[in-house]
Length: 282
Image 1: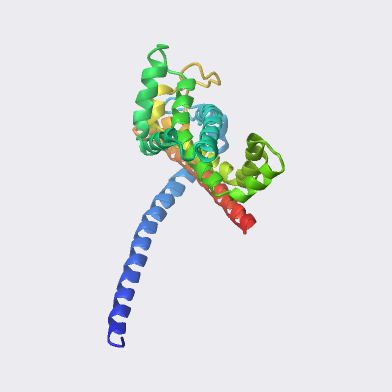
Image 2: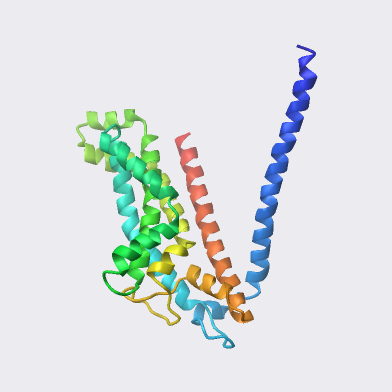
């Protein structure tokens, strides 16, 4: 045994060093990306970004129409995805946990979780844009809902599966119907976890570009009517990043910074909620 210890110690040191090196390599790229984003994005951050609309080259403009468009389309996607995701996750966890149809639903949900967003955009384009003959913010919101729903389904099911069956049995012993047990016992026990899934879904929708290219198209004018083409931050970032004009490139950096800060904020809030739930469970 004494002869084996030095060799094991050397292997442990080598593999631990490689693990630290791989971690440092990955974090270094993250720091470089965030550093470049903050360096270029903060220089264009001003009040005009939030109060002025996008303008032609050579004219000072902002991102007001894109910010409003992103908020409206994300809200549409959330209104569709949140109820569907929570109800589907509730069915999988509470009613059809071992049903044959549940395995099919989980399989389809897993496919949607890993499906490229551009495929989702093409699908919604075929079913929501072509029949109506025009692009719209509604189509963009539906595309975002298709992307967000699987996240909420998975999170809701996983959270409800963590609720001890003894809680359900105790509530049922008091004469509560199953629907009331789910609402008053199961949901209350995991509401922070479900909210975490919703926040993660919002973060995913916030940064999507490909589906909106085929559905919302974009709009250089301010509009709060989602029945027509509508701008969004990811679309304007994609458009201005390819522009040869310095003003539009600066706005692209600023828009990317706003999206990144929004996603980071939602991720931090989701982690805080998860941590508070874990502490409450302990």
